[in-house]
Length: 85
Image (cartoon, rainbow, N blue to C red; front, side, top):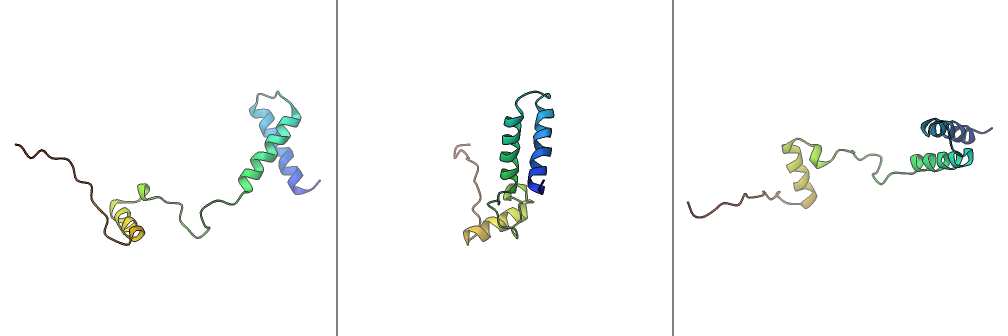
């Protein structure tokens, strides 16, 4: 048995357990193939690129990232103020 088939067999067993030890072995096998294919698929992000997002960055780093991305200073949101006091 090759390594890929062994991975599918183990994953199908895990799916069988997850499903309460019931269901069709063929369905579990096909689901295992799909899961392993999805896991092995290349991601959208390049390997040398950080997975961090602007939302997760500290404020200063977030502003710097926005400025770098837009090639200009980051615009600040202004809170609406009433002109009448």
